[in-house]
Length: 282
Ligand SMILES: C[S@@+](CC[C@H](N)C(=O)[O-])C[C@H]1O[C@@H](n2cnc3c(N)ncnc32)[C@H](O)[C@@H]1O
Image 1 (cartoon, rainbow, N blue to C red):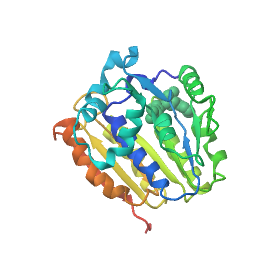
Image 2: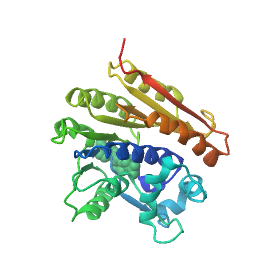
Image 3: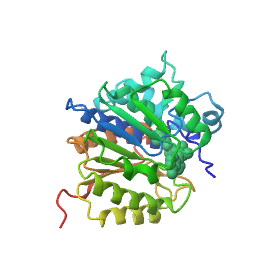
Image 4: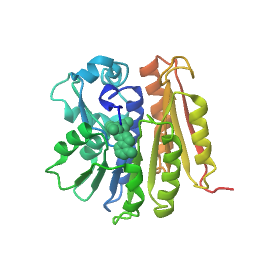
């Protein structure tokens, strides 16, 4: 049974990294007119309210998006991300936050499509209700990892696959690698994005090492840690591993990460931006 609910964590420091990079990648796909598909294997509830009992209980967003929101001059790299958040909120007060489905929905064009998977009954219901009348979005209550290969290659031949598990079950660390390897074989030109937490550094590195040895070229690793490894028992950092990252994403991350680190941690955190596997392997 799934117990993770993203509502507790929506808008936290990890979501800021996750969603700001996702917004940059989606914006890059829009540089060409040709349609694309966005596949979200772990979609969550779609959007979140900070006055909900979930957010109120943890207040995690106050150490995340609230700090960014309060900044007078955010960098240009945050423009699309912040525009999507602004569209959720009528006034200046930050009350609502778009999860990955609603964020991407706000950024796509008429020709683009979203395919969303979510397993949790309540979050699936919320997601279904959010997009029920939307012809550009399909929502399925299914195991997003199990069903991914069947969706590839997409008819559009262009797309981004976002894999954002909760890592509630330890076996997910291996499962995502096996799924990515299989998915890449079916759609080698696609953009794949894997989110990962830094909770136990050894576990994270073991997973990333397997990706490095997978034979899949062009992997870009972007990570932000708000505290040293093991400083507390929960998540001290998070990262995104991009396969076939869009052109300029590395340069955009180099502008963005120092700013995010200053705003979110007063400069106490650390970040990594590196070609985990270069364009040509070997
Ligand atoms: C980290 S949250 C997703 C957050 C969302 N991507 C966002 O950025 O707003 C992970 C979600 O995956 C769901 N989930 C867990 N295992 C799943 C699976 N195998 N297939 C589909 N959804 C799954 C959980 O119920 C949870 O809502």
